Length: 178
Image 1 (spheres, one colour):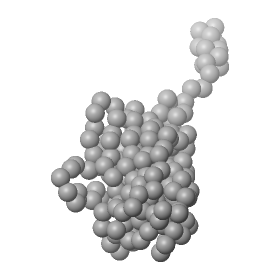
Image 2 (cartoon, rainbow, N blue to C red):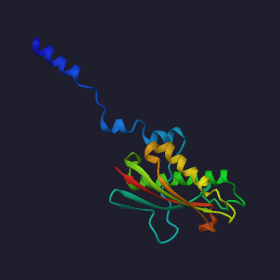
Image 3 (cartoon, one colour):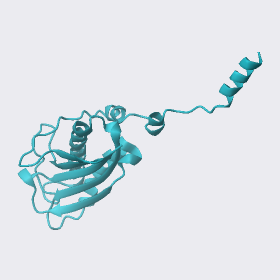
């Protein structure tokens, strides 16, 4: 009897521990994507002499992705002329979805992303347009929704005179793997 009593005391004293992975990720990245109705696209074929991504050590460098409309055609236009800030944010959000598709292809599981390290956003804009940072929020906010704290990143947003195919926004990123 004493042995069984001692054994039950041992079980009572040990704190309940969650598996390390479950403690860190309460909801899978894929669950969050599904909850938002987002389906990741396949990796786009490069339009020139480059690769979609490079993995070096624990970092993934993802090449620039241009904004595309839902039909797959380039989202053409210039911010401050034909496109306003709100539409530019939608375009940047669409790019973030494409970037996540490429990240998935690169690492096989988005839950392996330790952190979105940096975004660099190029915004096709008139010389008087000054809201490139707000346009880029369309991507930044989605990364925050999907990855939580791991989605908080450093960022640059530039206004440029033109982008490939006349698209309105192009974004590249750097991510860190677990």
